[in-house]
Length: 301
Image (tube, rainbow, N blue to C red):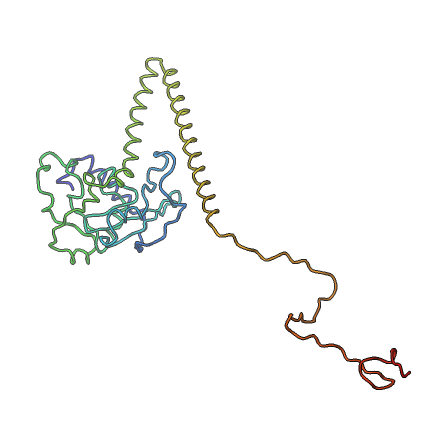
């Protein structure tokens, strides 16, 4: 790094190496279920700079599950950052994607990957993983692919000794897909807008025209809040229509009839069917002993 990188980028990489010790890696399977509450970053970018920018399933869809060698889950051991959970997809020794998307948005090796290098049997480092625009002038035209790939894990160093690596296009900032570029550019857009806003605020204060700028900002906020409210209402109406359509398509379920319990002991006799013969009661007279009547109606009494 010292031979290739400018002093500012070299200092930034050394800072990332020092920060990597705050994280705990654990290897997981690609089909791991992500916690819905630990979703993509919401709110202001500056309030959650290290938050996750993209979901694991989106990264796997971009590079293809068949091309993935390892998937790592990274957690922060610091109490104030325990809610931040990251996933790192290792494609080969010099190609990876992290859910923080810093290797795309900032074009440097981020702390999460440095921490995985200490444990992984695949992950390594080669200078071509960092874009040539961060090189010093006399190294920009040099072939960085010929440089040796470095490994922290001794087993990985033995397995990939002498292998020439080429970065996967899905992990290179200049050839990354639109889906990954959109996820990574949120920070870049925020920084560009915030830089212009600071410059405009400084000029408005110096020229005593801050009231004009405040009016613009208020109109902008009100107009875009109305757009968001209208968009949310349209989404809710569409969801309600879909729910109604689903209810119409569903088969109506016939429920059991209501049964009211009567007072007293329930009957124990069986109800006979219409085909069964009803047995008639046979009376025997105690006076004459003949069948068909009883003693109260006996004519011989």
